[in-house]
Image (cartoon, rainbow, N blue to C red; front, side, top):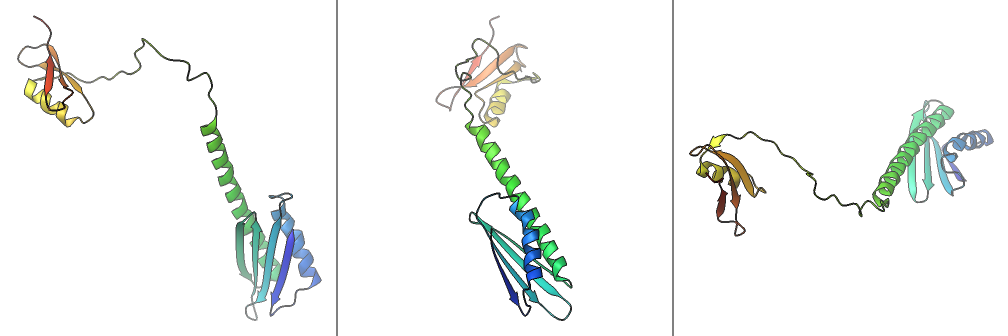
Length: 178
């Protein structure tokens, strides 16, 4: 871990350096042996508050925390908590993306070879109401994507099927024999 500590209007003491290094081990545990660059800037804002800014960069990903407190050590603690939250959130997102993409890439060998034949694979139920052939034609044209419509012919009382012909301009009618 490469740590750079800079003080603005505030002297960086050995105690501050040790404290920052000790606290940054909480961040380091998330990355293991990766090359981590940390830039810490401490400054005195006014007579009553001190600001700690911590920037962590790992493999091109940057995390940033800036807090202000009357105690510099409290400010550093808050920064570490914020950074830990950002890192956990990022790691969780990456793990989810990796998991999702690995499921998409799974090889389901043998499944493609199984073909379902001679089975009813889809079933649709709807109420058959007695309507005229013209009304059935209108209902079929309203249902985009459907190529046929089953109905009870109001004139004959028998089940009929109206369907679109391949020219998409005309219709066919299937009626049972008497």
